[in-house]
Amino acid sequence: GGKEGCIGAMVKEQLERMQHQDNAISCSICQETIDTRSLAPHLSNETWLALEEARIDSKVKLRVEKLSHEFDKRLDAKVQEFMKEYGSLSGMVKVQAKQLAKQAQDDIMNLKCPHPHCRAPYAEFDGCMAIQCGSCKNYF
Image (cartoon, rainbow, N blue to C red; front, side, top):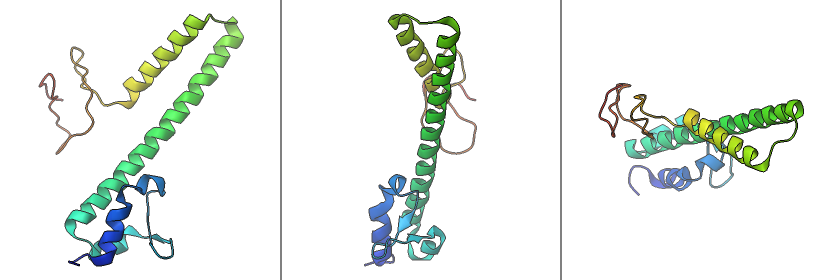
């Protein structure tokens, strides 16, 4: 029904699962990957925008996961290097080191207001790169 018909329904059904499908839409019959550009003429503007947003979200999530994994590997290597050089550490120091590393990772991976007195995290923004912090109301 409507402008989109079964193609639109197929795309809408797969939007939530895109991050688990290598950021792709698959034919519901043969499971072959469909070039998303070929879908554009068959989708409403609303569905096309939802598809593009899902593709971008999926790419961002995959990149964050990859960066997080790489960070964890580098951190483990540094901890092993430290242990080899300085010997064993008490359990408390290990826990504190991991907590500090996690905090550093969170600081690096999360977007935050750059003003030192605020540092409130934000997930997204609309418009240009001139952003107003929702917490302190400063612009950056």
